[in-house]
Length: 107
Image 1 (cartoon, helix red, strand yellow):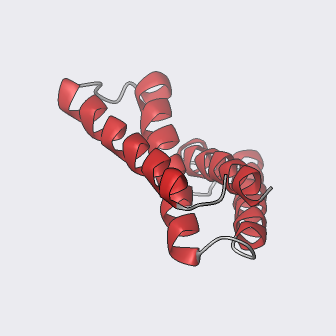
Image 2: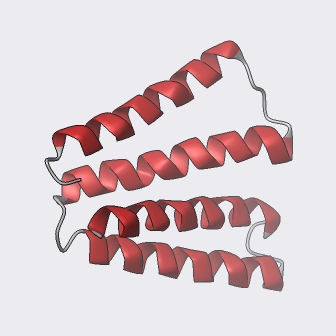
């Protein structure tokens, strides 16, 4: 169950990171509220996940999910460059996330 909470926390991390762009420096009330709500949910879910998972593993996976999702949505939503090198390094992060899950001993 902790891994599911952690993945969901990562999804909400993507939400608040993308929300920062839409909030225009936290100056737009509705996107700012959504950003803050996603941030709180993400942190609460992360806190619940680390009750059973090692903090180092959980934090690395949480930030990795956030980084991969945010970088990918940056390409799709904000016309950020989708270079071969960028895609390769996003893939490296995914391999790291999967690897941490595989060696954690908890599936």
